[in-house]
Image (cartoon, rainbow, N blue to C red; front, side, top):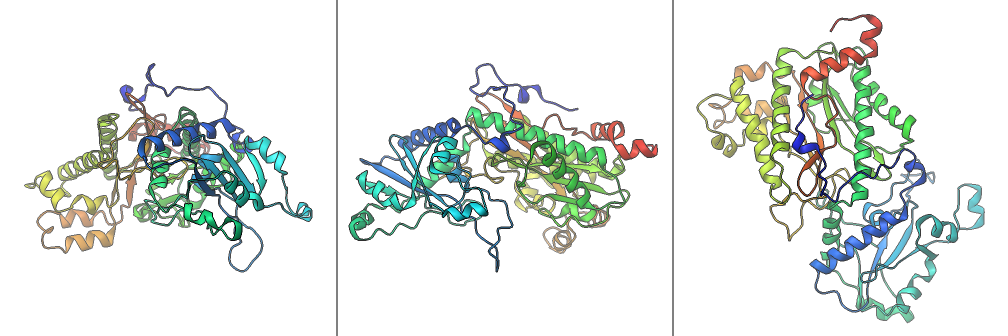
Length: 500
């Protein structure tokens, strides 16, 4: 299997080192509260560095996620997943909780509704003391929150106000409207978005504890992807391999919530970037693109492999796959902490793809890479960005902050490198019809790829002080390694004595 030793070995001087913990049961037991104490300390340190307007007693009022019934029912059909910012600072996994955090000392108190005793008929109702022992945070009746805030005599009350950098949706925060004896607190409320932005930036730089947990999550994700390789075949449905992936993780680690809906596409479906129907019958000769990750202790993974369902790549499939892998490896090779920018990485991936497609004849000779980039020919075959941050959210925050333009990758970042080549018929047809692209694109050859689908290879890359670590390096990635792994481990080919 292809490897790059300089990119995979932890350095002795790095602050990121293995804790040698067994995380296997943590989805059940939860993360130790000390981890979230460290998160709060890091956030406050970054806040004091980046925000000079903190004054006197500054309190941050937080709101956790709500468990909301869907549509016209009072039954909660979905497992609750905590809002990421709230979880990062508190570690609390229960819904409908608020918290108040001192932005100087880090002191934090949580407030929850005291439920009627009859609720115990329907659900587990922890006491305030049980919650305190679980999270090492003081819990009080939510009716006391205004009194608590007033007694602290705050100079400023901050909220997490801002919009998510991917969805543009507003971050949830409590609606503060103080009345009567508390009304003077209304004048203390700040509407700045800077606090949220600094929290996003803090979340982007993982602690050593987060590094270890995310490394483990990727390990079990790799194992689940190998399970797909052990069972891949044609004549079954795409969803059957989604089930192989999810069942493996559920059985072994009691995972109950995916990181995102599993993308499992064969044939032309593999060219749909966020395809998740997974209901088509797989045919002989198809490629199967599995973009699948898991949520474990609220943290996520995001990994993609593309494999032949017969155990062997065709000549055409191998040619395109090798280009995507070369793009992936060239980007990882160039990544240097505190030096390489994300736009540089993205550009490198596209240059490799353009040059190699030109060698195959899909792009005509006589055009420079700069000309091809200027005319956005790369977007015809790779219409998405190279990657994104990963953490509590699969598209994690912190990649776009106002004081870090041209985002340089930093120690503590976990970022996907996921180049791809896709033959999307309508996109190709539209491109072939454009006058400025007609001399560039080899229309006759491109049309022979209309039924090809797409190939994507996605690795989660962790950045340390002086190296980068590929969390998915132990997955078979070259065409030779994939074919060899399937040949040696696939249960169907073994049982039927099929030669591949």
